[in-house]
Length: 496
Ligand SMILES: Cc1ncc(COP(=O)(O)O)c(C=O)c1O
Image (cartoon, rainbow, N blue to C red; front, side, top):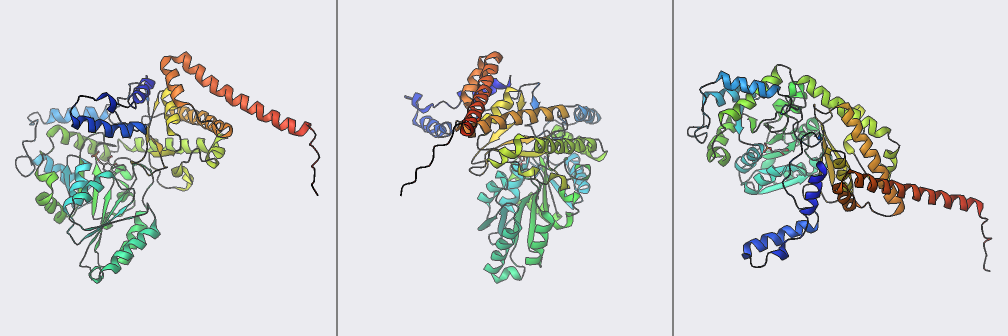
């Protein structure tokens, strides 16, 4: 049951450092640091999503991990290559290159209309390679403030001395930062210093989409000599957005404007690894200078075969209906949410905000990621888990302070009934939250979890208690209103 997972999460928040007496100082210090997290109820432990639960959590957007179509193709691919070697045999620079990976890279490049592609073991490593090895000390990196953690790691090891962020998806701030950089040294105007611009197409925590064309136009206007180079991460869009899932850049025809692109395979394509799409020059440079290519074993045959089969599915159109289904479910979710009577009041009271749903009817592309931003994410997660719906909360430092959220991820394997069930849960939760605001009494999440782990009857009772409280509160309020009408007001005594 999902609620067991929630209970073990609660158990993991109990302080531990004071039980470490007699242990080596090193471990005591580690536990003391972990206690810092436990105190904020932010201690992370590894969990397994129980089978049979409703998945609004995984990155298996197209459901390819589940429905067997990719597995069948993969097994067939192994069969077609009976003599394959299991391990790759070494780093890409030694024994780890072979016709299979070389051909796969050519095919990936052609599919996304890029000059070349270079496969990495993960998107994380690819971003470290891009930002850690490509910029020279005089280059400047400009990045969206919500860029993925792996880019930050790359920027820690980069030689570029200057790194500046701009406000998330904010064109005015982007222009301001670029202008500031251009004015900082006349050499920029001559095109002799480079600005690398790091953005994502679909932002992983916010689910919104970058205004890429506008960003590109501004960069060209400010750096007309081509010394503004875009590095665009399509991790969340791969397989999900654009024709045949080729990504947002391909959907908007911006291939020639986005010099370096990253597609990852662990999410929509249910595999592992990533490919950097780039000009040949960049590929050659990465092969020569990126530690994440040079000093690591290159991907094994099964790893590459899974990616190859996933591209087969994209190319032959098998995934197109899955993409369409995700979008239809997201639209259904927004329209049902907006139709709930509890929604406007909750939005106005700051109980819940869902920015990606605003104007959703007029948006051409809707992403599969829907953050539910709420001050009290824990009670929402608890309620979802009670109903065997799984999604995870995210809090600072993964998201900005005060912007904690439950991140919903929609999948092709979700059903309309599951979306409707989710809406019912949200409706219940918003009503309870509105009550909590009215009564000025926070929801007792811990009590609910304890009740739930004692058994379904106890949970029902605890939920019924909350609802009874709501009713009592409303009756009390109604009586106050009635009394105000019935009881004659005292005449006001005016002191003269
Ligand atoms: C935007 C973005 N870039 C890169 C990565 C890392 O990709 P991978 O999981 O292949 O390491 C992720 C994964 O969370 C991501 O969301």
